[in-house]
Length: 137
Image (cartoon, rainbow, N blue to C red; front, side):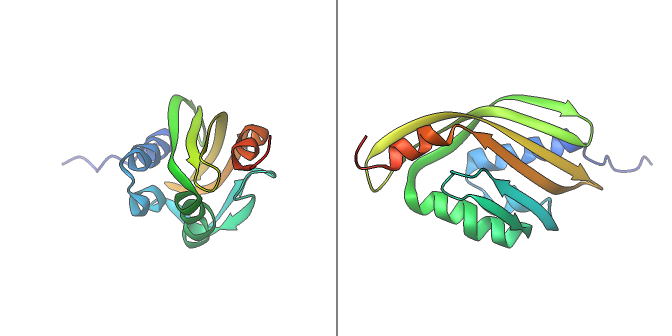
């Protein structure tokens, strides 16, 4: 009998993105370690470093769901560099308060250790996101 397959870091990150596309928040956060450092870029609506899945849920995904309509990340490329995985794609959504839509390119850098996400860092064009949030241009 063979041992069960342990998921690679790239498979763990892909599972997060697959869960995101289904809107399955518990599954999105399932592999996030309790002490993981999740960093949203300065200038982004959820800017800061959040520790663990509950803070990520409360300060990132709950805020995006509340403030944006049809907010989503579309993965275009996944780069497997062993314990480091990079997801490249596009954010889209409409800011509820202004009704303005946005599309911004983004890169996510994931660090995985012992089958757990231990760090995440986002890089995006925050100006495009901010412009959708402004009532004046």
